[in-house]
Image (cartoon, helix red, strand yellow):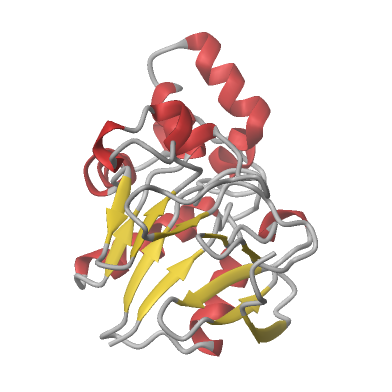
Length: 227
C-alpha cells in the first residue's frame, strides 16, 4: 500500500481520470487529497462523484479547501453566494446540468453536500508528515491552527519548519511552472491544473510524482532538492 497525495483538482476531471490510469492508483493505495476539488474547471460534479466513490471504499482522506468552504457558506448568505460565484462557483453549478440549462444550488445532490460537510477534514497527520490545504503557523499544534491559516494563507520560500519536525504537504499556492515546490520541510503540490497546468499525484514515501492535464497529456518526475 502506498500513501499518495493529490493536489488541487479544481474541477479537472479529465486530468484526474487520466492520472488515475497513469499512476495507476491501486485499490489498496491510500489517497490524501488536499482540497479545492471544485470551481473554475469544467467538471466539479464528476470530481466529487469520484471522491465519494473512493471514500466509500475506505481509501480516501479528503481535506477541506477554501473553495469547498466558500461553497458551503454560499447556501445561506446572499453576499457569500456572490463571492463564491465570482471565484469559480459558476463553473461548479454548470457542471451539474446540461450546457443548455443553468445550474443552481438546488442542482447539487445531497450526497455532495454531505461529503463536504461530514467527510472532509481540516488536516491529516502521520508519523512523518502532515497534510493541510494551505499553511500552518510553525509553533502551533495542528488542532489549534486558525481557519485563515489552514485554508487561506499562501506558502512562500521564507516558510519555516513546523515545531513537530514533520514535513508539511499542502496545496493552495499554485506553482505556475507546473513543478511541485520542495522546501525540504514543506511541499506544495498545487500545480495549477485548472489554468493549463498539471494535476499532481505524489508518492509520499518515494518522492516520485505523476502529472496529467486536461488535454490527457502525462509526465512524471522526482522531487527536486529543497531550495
